[in-house]
Amino acid sequence: LKIYESLEFSEVKSAFATYLRTVEGQKTLANLEPMTQQKEIQQAFDQLRDIESLGTAGYSLPMPSLGDLTPSLKRLQVEAELNLDDFQDIKALLRASQVLKDFYLDLEDVSLPHLAVYFENLETFPQFQGALQAIADNGTIEDFASEDLLRIRRRLRQADRDLRQTMQELLKKKADYLADPLFASRNGRHVLPVKQSFRNRIQGIVQDISATGNTVYIEPRELIQINEDIAGLEAEERYEIRRILRELATLLRPQVQAFQNNHWLLGHFDFLGAKYQYMRDRDAHIPT
Image 1 (cartoon, one colour):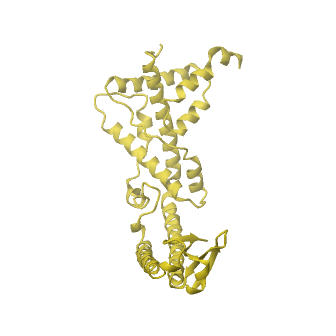
Image 2 (tube, helix red, strand yellow):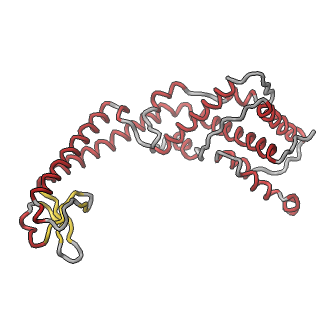
């Protein structure tokens, strides 16, 4: 530990950390210790020299930012239930893998004798491209993920239109009874803020009363069935989404080992690319 302090090893690692774009690369850095075996040291320099040759030829590794996929891949492996964020992570991994593989296959006039095997071990999965399109980039699931989901969401949109139209009609008809000319929300239900003196003029369910007692929040009778229909459809939607995600997980699970391998490889490439950037910014050189 005293030697680490003398070498300012932690300070160098901290300065280097800003160059990393993946959590896996950051883990590699966190676990890094000074090497003592000549073969290991030479291998690290040889790989860095390959990255340097890319830079000299005008190329740079297309490394996207990647979070920690370890928990998502572990859940996939042990058949735990995956959520949309997990599939977003896996989709990002496969996209990054494809980008880096395409980069390698398109290289010209550059020899990478010490990194070729790493690029060749990076797998791509075009067979999942169609299925994973169901997971939108904003972290939702697309309507076309299944016929049932599309049907449910069409009914939901129609119910929502019916709800809004009925609400507008009620606001016009009951305007004189309202404390405010708008709908409010109480207990997840759409309610009218009715003046206490007119509470008996509007039929429905009292969902809340204001602190002063001057306003009664009533769910109008005209909305109760529509709200119930929407709640039922939303429950159907949640069930169908869970079914789709289970089906998708079953499709992906046989490749989980390859995903984990790609995850490590991307972190390794990130670490090597960061080394080169760190070296170049300091006008440093690979020693012999």
